[in-house]
Image 1 (spheres, rainbow, N blue to C red):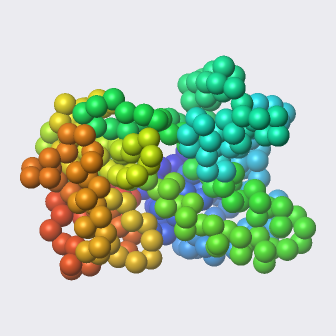
Image 2 (image 1 turned 45 degrees about the vertical axis):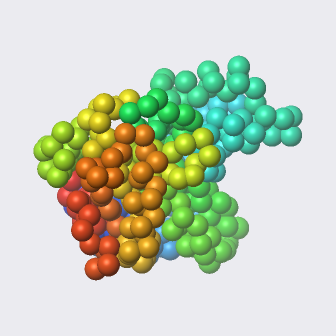
Length: 300
């Protein structure tokens, strides 16, 4: 499996296109081999929608069938997470179906199996100086995550001879799906930069996010001296993966939300921004400002 920088090099893509290509392919060789060199992600996906047997659809489906050959509880839990449910309560409600929410006595062992033994799910915990809840779940492999989020539904349109509807569905859902899916990639990139001593905060060794039980606010990035419970929070930050630059309004929101992270001191704590479309002049002055190229480079 190729990582973001390797995916970028293999496909001849840079910046946001390289990140999108990694999200769509997961760096899986079976998808990368089918991807014409230099083809932008949306154009490749449009081409794949013309072929119901495309690698973009077939590779994740084969993984799903190999790991979960029958629609049992484990598969329903995976599909619930893939559809966007992140919390224990939401997953239980979706995976339980008409019979009512899946009971904790059944769901908790399944989540442990899917995160530990199967490693098909990942569990994220809020990072601060205090132990935090709730944990949030996500599909670990990016191609499978996008498949469950939108590509499987697109494949159904493609099989019915409607590639136009398939691609329209992908375009409609892509921005919101990638906005959430890119966060762990950014956190890992910052974490690698921290371990290499390449961040403005030399004592930073762990990078995560923070949220409370109400998910108001959710802070995309938190840098600390250790995880899962930090001694010191060194920076807080925002990931804006949209077509508009990070601006003064975004900066004001980040400053406000950061103060709620336990252990963050607005007088000494830094601010980090990772933005697909860059940063406007009225938002300058943050301690770290990365774009998509910086994210890919950190993986290199």
